[in-house]
Length: 282
Figure 1 (cartoon, rainbow, N blue to C red):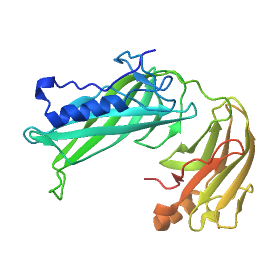
Figure 2 (cartoon, rainbow, N blue to C red):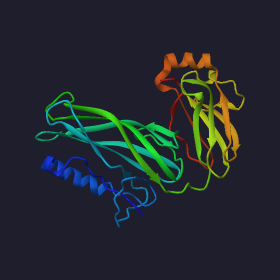
Figure 3 (cartoon, rainbow, N blue to C red):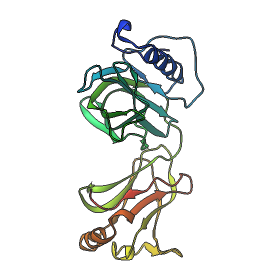
Figure 4 (cartoon, one colour):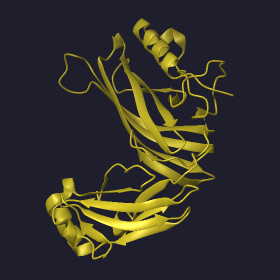
């Protein structure tokens, strides 16, 4: 079984002592769990980490705008066989040392056979697409700042592209995935799909926000004691979907006045409630 460590493409003679120490630490924590994810250029190791520990891609160095500025960037992935989480990471340097503050944000897409199969922002879980080899395309923005600075000293961004392989099997049971349809930019319905291999019992879509009862006329949707709207949709068989239609004019009015507090979630008796998704177009 191939696993990986984080390796920089910068030659060793360009490393500061602080940078060497930082990369050494990253190498230790980046050892992947068996059955989570790996890169095409993975380095073999006999060490097996605990289940659920992330695996990380091989890092690369991006040059900053100032003399001696650069950032090492990489992505880490973990899955429990149900959900997938991919996060952006960076270490930020200048000619004489390491920036005290370094952050990384990003958005990513997984592709298989040239087709998009999953996408999200760094740190936001999505439904795990299952075992296989994928292309990971992650747009990463890294920012570095010294302790005495009130603004970023370093800012770099770009696409971090790697081939990754997941071998964690999908967990038996329901696996719900929700999305606005036909798209998040043109929502006319909220759709929940069971991508698992067993029925999802008593699926519920919940909508939260001011005047939320105006968003749909679906008779399956009733206000609860907290003023949210709960839509009882029954059981959903494997590879099947269920939808709640939206009243577009009412939704647009609500989003104009209450944009930051209008969300929807979904759950089942045998599937935990999802993270909140915005009902409003970004």
